[in-house]
Length: 554
Image 1: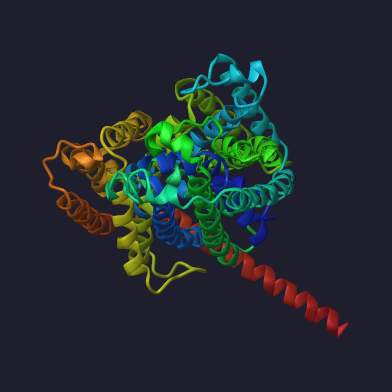
Image 2: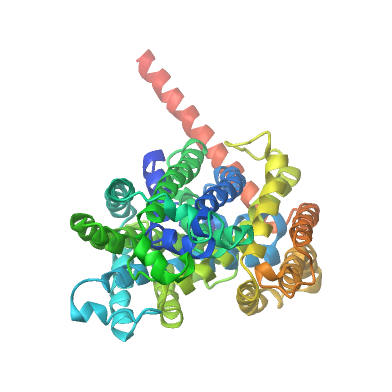
């Protein structure tokens, strides 16, 4: 038995479709719904409604590619493994790094959201937690306490995590629905959509930018969580697709309802005083609107939920990122200690500790929900591009691998998903896109430490197979810089032609990526592991049948 098999035997396969859907929905409904409606409206105005729909379409398309991969490889930290299986160490590492950065930075983001909402409490000490732009020193200290709380909830056992999360998720779903309904009943001013610039006050480009940077991508990104916990799924082939697709669809309905409620509940006087949607200023948007219309009970409920919703998501992400670290270690890019799983609790404790330290670092640098939302969203999009390429690459390289989920339309879905991911990356606007691509480069020294010591003959195919991803990031950075002024570029690409250019880039790199995949050692190893597991399962079933037959004869 390999070390990897041994470590994975310590995980407990106890999560069914309901628990996994709760994991996905619990990840999606975190702080995004508390701030996303206001932030999306500030960028796109009433057209923010469409931004949520576009975001769901992007997430669902990309999620379909990852659902097939997740059912093929039901292993902990699944999202950081697929690029390694299809393209080897360079592309695999870049994809894993992007995934990890996108997810681990959510943990301090959720803690920040809770404290930012608390700053609206009617106490002098609460007002000192947030200065209108970022957390103060006392706010960071309180957010740090929340990080430690998430950590300890995950320290003891996966069963405790599942029970806690299921209960929290029920609350997290009920409160947003109740909020949307109560605000709509309290005040529904349709003139807000007609006045103040109309439906698209900042143009259609602002709608697309809202998808990328307002927290919408962040909000839907929770679909990854069931995949990262696939090693603990009872029946991955059936439960993973239900959990991933179901959580996105349910979240879309809730988010659109909340966005409509926010748009119609904003007092006309507030809009008139601000001058536009972009200049509205609420520390606790939905709670402030509740108080404006006399819904004191709802405001109190929202203040409570501002702890529960983000804390539930932070708890989930603390769990899933620890599984991602385990996966990165097994890819060969972290010390062995981070691959250890406690045999009694089934929890990768060293990985939990590493993620806690990194979460503290993010909290120290990015102290506001908005700044974290921008970084997380763009890093998330970069992590998305691996799935469409990997799923079709593995269909070519390993056609005989068991695929519990296999869509006939995947040859169409995969390139569309690649194009969607490329568009959202471009919509993120320069210079933010360049900054996040630079963050991707920051992780390369870790890859170099483990890989450049290998003989050239062994290293060369990994470099050749991963070149497409490096080139893709560089080209996208250049296009973002040279693109339309609506998206922060220099204007060298005319409006409309910039979108056409990005679509073509997505398709070109999709073809290059699929063609550059190769049967690398990681893929060969996982094929052997899966074959051994299938053989052991068949032997166990045969032995069980023999015992049952012997019992009948006796």
